[in-house]
Length: 505
Image (cartoon, rainbow, N blue to C red; front, side, top):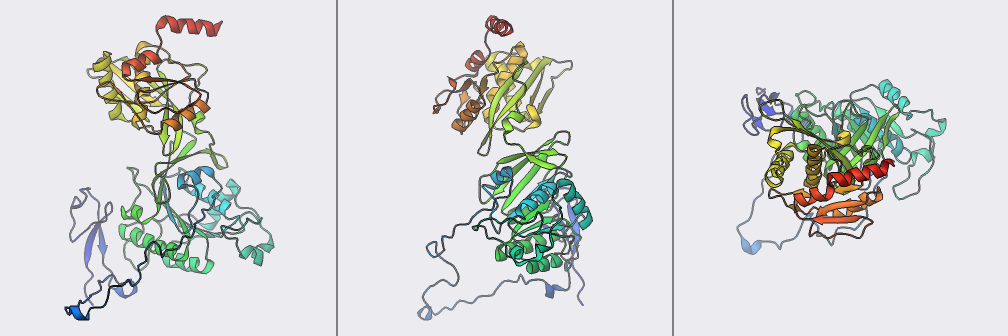
């Protein structure tokens, strides 16, 4: 028997090395190489050897060229794929309009953020029409039922659940039928990949939830569950089943301490959609963000709120990220950020104060730190505000991350308003990118931003000059320089005092 070969695999990029190094030769990550032992029972693994082809040199005997299995676009059928409604509009928005049959969806997030809760609630909604298999590799069946009872998912079902009417599930195009809650939601506490594939082949579910991929292992491989080889092989096997049998796979993925999905990067390449579940453990709302989607737009977000009975959708996220508009405070500005195709109105808050140290402090929450440094430099050079001797703090209300250039004008106005201790008109929204020369640059999706602001009752909008503006119920003020925007957004002191006296009277 030949001696097993030992090699080392990087758990970050998946590169193989014949010997151990302190730093991966491929990606440069330190302490990321893990020892792997090549299995000697290679007969049970699929052969990856190349096929040796020979080409005849006799051109006269060559056959005419013709395809063996490839098709042209004209030969491929135009079958329309109907998406499945998950029961949650925020999830359907992130997926691009619903769940695509036969797709692989990877959901990652921090521990305790609500990944399993979301998938259990979605499985319960889908079980009203389709057969669902929930594979729990981290919990027992009793633990899943206990959590499902708290969410209102696990309810008693009638003995008629085994009738032919319940076994013959409706197809996506057929009308929905009324069945008992949870009647077609099956739970499988298993981590063995072969047992999971046998259950999928026997049950033939429409949707299979794998919670989580890092706990599933292929017995033929000698590496531990969660290693690079295990995650790669298990995901590849699930992908083949999903594409061959048209089974939708919802896969939960762990994340590293840096926030990236644990395992090789090929995991994100194999799946069709990658979603990140984000949120602050001190806040109740959660953000579901897509970073890859073969069937829709990327960088879409869905917003949920964590309550005592699970996750609840937030129908109007702009109200969540807006502060109290009845009592405006100095140093606040309203911007309209776009996440994918969704415009969200966000309140930015700034605080400028004299520094107590040799170098001033700059701090951001939800705003790009480098963009803040550029905006502060522009305000000092082009407007003449001595910010190099002042501490500057900028934050977005609600903790939403707004890092696109369209919020630059709102950051600049909030900083100037805090420096002058002035109040920006609460009925004004600010949209625009600030250039290094002090000019305002045009931004994309202006029509969506202005319509969202008008829907929420705003009266004015300060936007870059020279941009095509839609016909909305707003007073639009186009400006070319950031100085002109400051003059338009922050009225003189005597005008502001008169407006406050009128409101008090």
